[in-house]
Image (cartoon, rainbow, N blue to C red; front, side):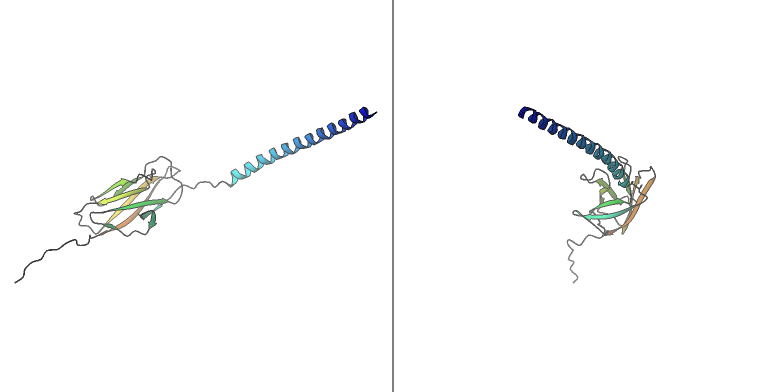
Amino acid sequence: MSEWREYRELAQIEKALNEANDRLNSIEAALADQSGKIDQLLQALVPIEVPATAGKISQIEGESQMAITGTKVGGSSVFQVSWNGGMKPGAPVVWSADDPGISFAPVAVDPTGNTVTATDVAADTLTQYVITVKGTASDDTAVSATATIPLLTAPATGGTINQVS
């Protein structure tokens, strides 16, 4: 009789385990379905990139953006453009100046081309120059930004003494 009782208890335990396993499978299926819905909702929340329509040029001092203060005659300044939307990955960013004495070199830590060093010649007689940066927005339209940069005279580093009498 006791073997029969043990058998019935084991059968009841097995039945309870099977029912629990069925409920667990049902819960897993419901979670998988909800997970798919959550993924769809997250995809809908991902912001849609808006193509750039313009940019703003700032001067960089150290690691900080700042208002444009100018370039010393014969010196150099670092400039960076911030676009107001998405740009086409890998498309060139081209910098130019209306002053032939200004040359540009890319800043190595910015592979996008959005940061450059502008260097002026020592004999520049102008008081300012205009820089323009052109690029391609993510929708393949051309975008640009322009800034006027003051040319600052270098401080005197010496003088000439003339005898007057």
